[in-house]
Length: 32
Image 1: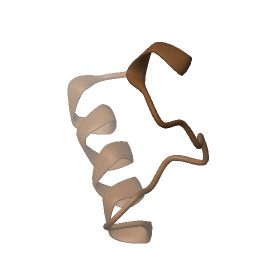
Image 2: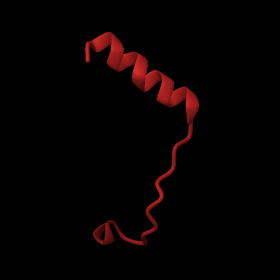
Image 3: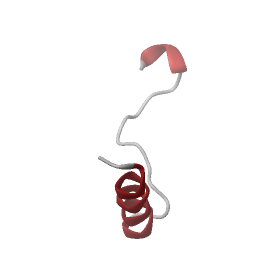
Image 4: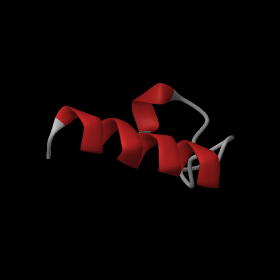
């Protein structure tokens, strides 16, 4: 991908989901 295409791709992802959250549930970073 060209840099302009990469920027467009991530911009569209951000617009589609402005506040993404992980699906992982953990109580410590050592559990990941």
